[in-house]
Length: 362
Image 1 (spheres, rainbow, N blue to C red):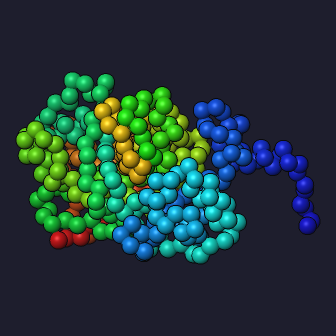
Image 2: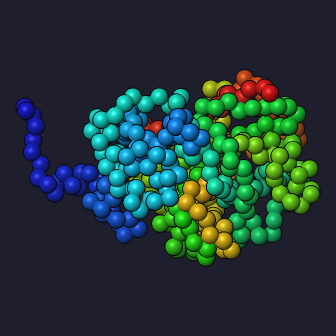
Image 3: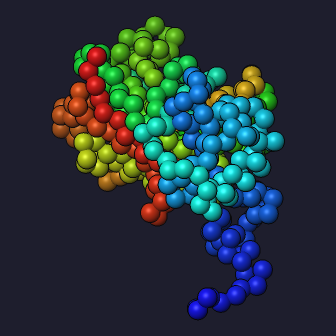
């Protein structure tokens, strides 16, 4: 072919490594070498085949998918036997990137895990903790900077990325919360932060829907959230950490998480630098007294930056900043018809796909 210049094998390998890891060769901290890991991988779940859906592998450009039934029928089944399933799924990813598969319709996707054994959500961004506690006239805990905050959310019914957000009563104070989420493999009790990285199998995003006005009364009982935390929505794609390249390091995702409300930018905070407790720290904390099964969802908490120019990942923070500045909150909570989107882009690439939800009354 005219203009085609042959490159030797070392050049091709180096080019692939740069595409995978960014500039420079893979370091010890980034995992096995390219030949051992195989192609990067994005997984999704179709709304078909039963309550847990059908596992598919998505091409790098997000245009095609290959059904993964020959490897595992569902995301949970793949996670249950990850050591065996991962290489075969990466092979499917290579085939999808080479042009095999059928067109992908994001509207046909469920959450990567339509239901999960556990949904454990942290609050790793101190700025968020401080602002939201101020909003309900509560002091941060004395151990704010030394001991992570976590709660256990409902995981039996999870929302797809394009599902509506139900609003039974506007007085309940409906809010969005944009977060990073890790999907764990089997994680032993006593796992330390230094040993936590191998247990993070996949990464995705979520909208941790919250009913702000129900929370203060619940917390006064001294027994944690329940009614204030309805079903959570998840991004279309769950990706292997190597899909994120150099922005995934030290148990943090060093990129901007973008949230819009009714087409306007709500916030685009950096998810990495101000994550006080990394995912490794959160795993050490939750595994202190118990093990966690494959398919456990672990959230970062609302991504938050102290710089107001970065906006917000939830309305409660915006309202608290208004109170601090003027004495009154002028931003309302979500109402029927409002549209929320959440995504994270690396360059032009929408890595996890977009959470795109509209609030519906009832």
